[in-house]
Every structure is written in C-alpha cells, then in structure tokens.
Image (tube, rainbow, N blue to C red; front, top):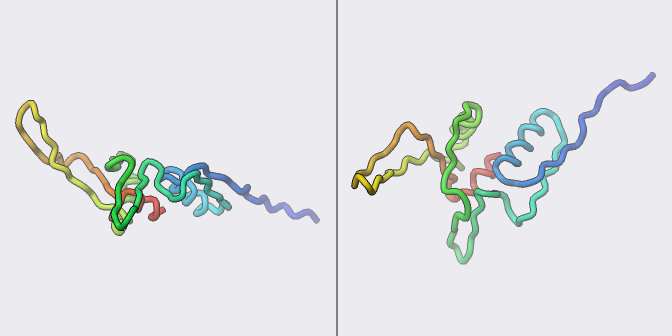
Length: 119
C-alpha cells in the first residue's frame, strides 16, 4: 500500500525584519518547516538597532503604525517588547502642539529591534 500522506514543503523566508519573522512564525504555526535567511548579524530589518559601548541606537523607522486588526492585536499581546507611543505633534506654522489619540503608534522596548524578538 502506498502512503498517501502529503508532506508540507520546507519553506525559506528571506529577511529577518518584522514582516519576514512574522511570516515565518505564522507558517511554523501552520505546520511548515521554515528557515529564515538574513544578511545582517541580527534581526530587525528597518527596525534595526545597534549597540556600542553600552549605548543603543535605533537605525531605522522610529515607530510602527498599524491599521490591520490582526496585527494590532498581536502588538497588544506583546507588551514586553512593544509599547504604544503618543508623541506630541507640533504644527510650527500655527505655533501649536497636540497629541493625536486617533493615531496608534507603537515602538520597540527597550529598542526598535526588540519587536522582532516577539515573533
């Protein structure tokens, strides 16, 4: 008798930024074997951080803004690596500042690349 079990293929994800790692995590949850390939020494992609002599510098985007409910929920469930950020925005032409609570901005804690470790 033939074994009719269909095996899922092994998949490769290129890039260990947030999108690549989140994709790899979802594929792994679905039962796929996944290998992530990254050109840099660490994770992060556009959320990369660098440490030198005990100091940390974020090298990429300053925050994440999401409009996808599933991703928004994922961010909320990883409060050790991600926190909501509400900057005070200024309009210099009006000499006014305000906080816009409608914008949901998120930052990595303690540095941007920490978000990728939540994947």
